[in-house]
Image (cartoon, rainbow, N blue to C red; front, side, top):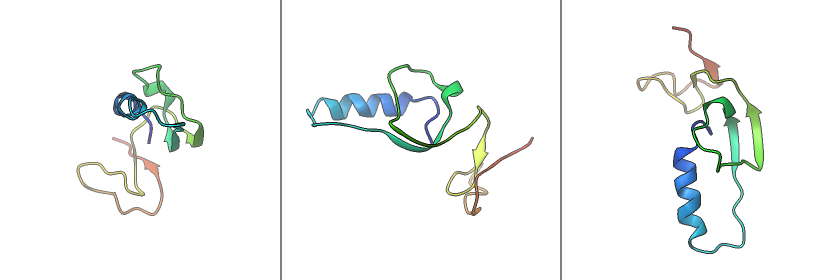
Length: 76
C-alpha cells in the first residue's frame, strides 16, 4: 500500500545513491490523498483507493483482520 509515501521516498533516495539503471514503483493499493511527499510516483498501480483505513489480505488493525481473504474498510 502506498499511503503517505514517506518511507518509500527515503528508500528511493537510498537506492538511487547506488546508481541503478532504473527504479520503478509497483503498488497494489495507492492512496494519493494521503501523500505527504510529491517525490513518489508509482509506475504500476493495482487500485487507487480513497483515504480510508483498509485491512485484510495482510493489512491489519491492532493485529486483527490480517487473515481476511479480501481488502475492506473498517467502520468505527
